[in-house]
Image 1 (cartoon, helix red, strand yellow):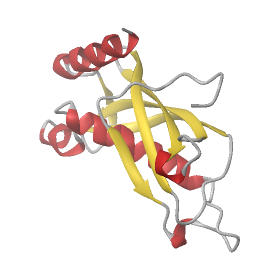
Image 2 (cartoon, helix red, strand yellow):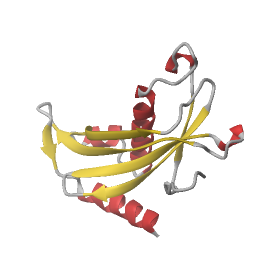
Image 3 (cartoon, rainbow, N blue to C red):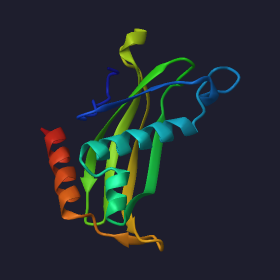
Image 4 (cartoon, one colour):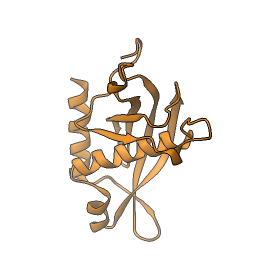
Length: 152
């Protein structure tokens, strides 16, 4: 682990393989892929909490990204294997935020080098008008439990 970075605590770590299509001619991953990996890791974590996209849709809800922040540290390259641990770091009445890190898989030998870190703030919307909706009590409780568990 790189000095000065805090480990992200997650019950699950999303894993990805850098594909050739993710890269430029030099084999460096395009900056947009980091945001995509972060979002996929968050949606996977929500699925693990029992509130995945399908489950929310059954209740007329959908997650929507309100804010995305990514800090780039070093590039991922083809054919790296990537790990993206995420953790809940804020839960409000109508929005919640996950923080995460994009790391090179430790198997490469550089001790899971930090490639990027970021956060994704989401809200829920309902109906075809995409009206803002409060976070259902069950989801709010699970998000808070996850956040408090990470703080221990």
